[in-house]
Image (cartoon, rainbow, N blue to C red; front, side, top):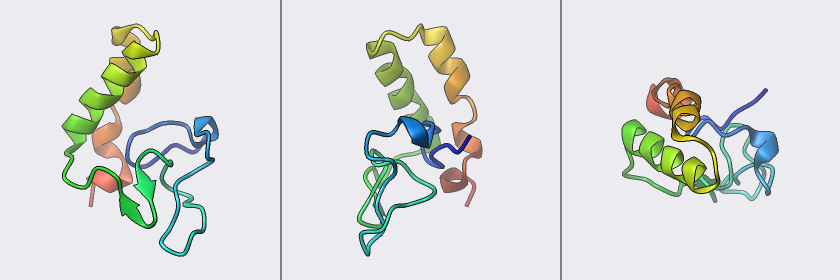
Length: 83
């Protein structure tokens, strides 16, 4: 399963099926929440801030926080954060 290399969300769950590159084509690496027009939507965000945001967003959507924490623990290992 392919996941966004910024937030870890499965790309198949993205309502727009991926972010967009500068030329308008779909990104194969990033979701539409994280990446638009070839740029990250949260430019000055750290991996830890992204993780905290995702945990809160998942909890708001009804996911138990312990599961949200489990699902986001690999965010610092994703391509965006390991450069």
